[in-house]
Image (cartoon, rainbow, N blue to C red; front, side):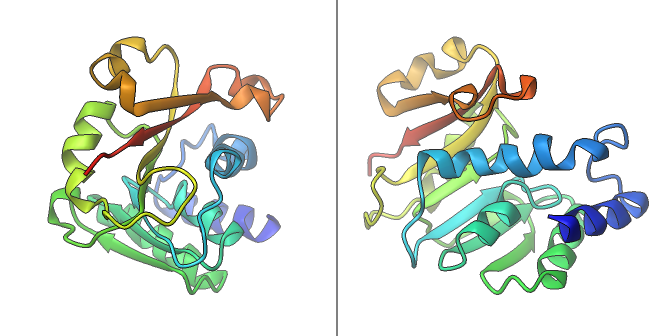
Length: 190
């Protein structure tokens, strides 16, 4: 953890990846928040996961550290943020991470799951990533998206309620930050 704090602190001074006011909350607001996904699913060895809109590497890098037998593809349309994620992954020796500076629509590969930290409404995220979800099932949850979201999601999930499962992060994390934070799984039926 100390190495992540040092690396993100150094990079954040050059490239504003995390709000300058929020960098002191790196562990709680970014690392621990990202690991909330692992409370819902531990991807099986050999799984392929795309982190859509990764920014500086969240949730992909913390998940890649926790699950070294899973392949993570970190994707973002902002080049300087992808560079930070790439350099952090390289500096800590992550062999299971690759980073791409591109838009989601440009990605042609298939994945078991797409993870994200609320980069857009769920319906839009589904439109961008549905084509990238593999039909081959290997994990406990059906293939699809596992997304970190906050607040009241009733309206956002209304059109796909039958495909969604939602977990409150406050059941695992006691910090106030997690009071309205959720993990949402959206099953993609192929």
